[in-house]
Image 1 (cartoon, rainbow, N blue to C red):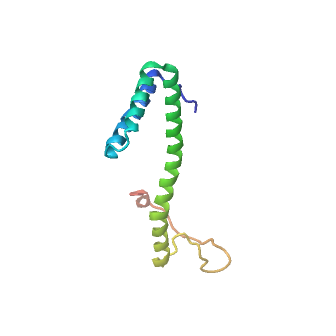
Image 2: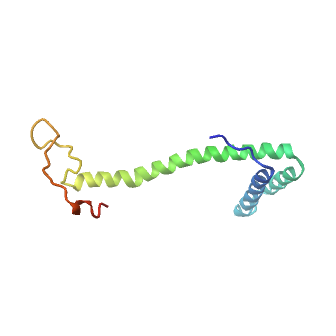
Image 3: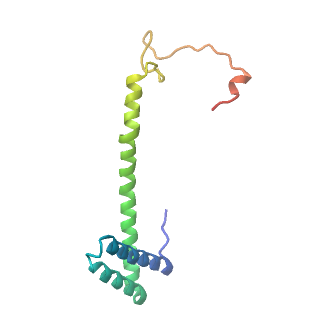
Length: 128
């Protein structure tokens, strides 16, 4: 998939997002880091006066977002698997007496079993 180049509007949105994020971080840290306001003002000035630097900052911001998205999705999916799905599967294996997947051989050397069933119209109703 080919990515479209950033438009000036998207670049300015990225700059504005950075500035607002820095100001929010300044207030969230109870105004201990005055450098955040200075950096926010500098980034805002760059966005206003330099097209070249604006495009470079926006490109770096988008790359950072892309990398964070790739890493975060793997962390979240791993957490969901190991915190929810894996314990549920273990509990089901421990407490279930039924072999739904027919993984255990009941007789003979084959997993194949004959199912003599004649399909009727009612078998096709309420499939789900």
